Length: 92
Image 1 (cartoon, rainbow, N blue to C red):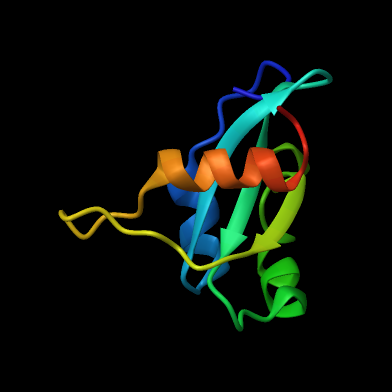
Image 2 (cartoon, rainbow, N blue to C red):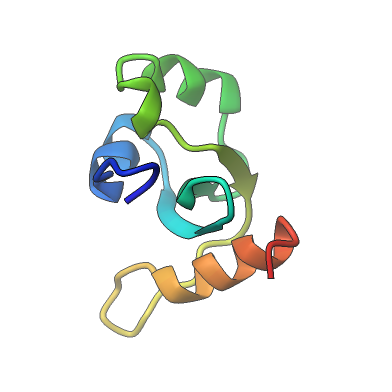
């Protein structure tokens, strides 16, 4: 939830077309805000164009670049990504 709207991270991830993780992190203004963390080497201009098809409230507030950690199950470690993004944006 961000500003009272339900955001599905998988929609944002799918729309990006490249390796990355969408996570919600705490925000004083929005309650939570969506941040997208892309694997090194992604093209931010290309992703921005793809996200234009999404409603404005469903687009990430910040886009960061970082190595995506994975769990033993092969899924992205969303908690680790959210912790890193919170620190990176200094929102502790």
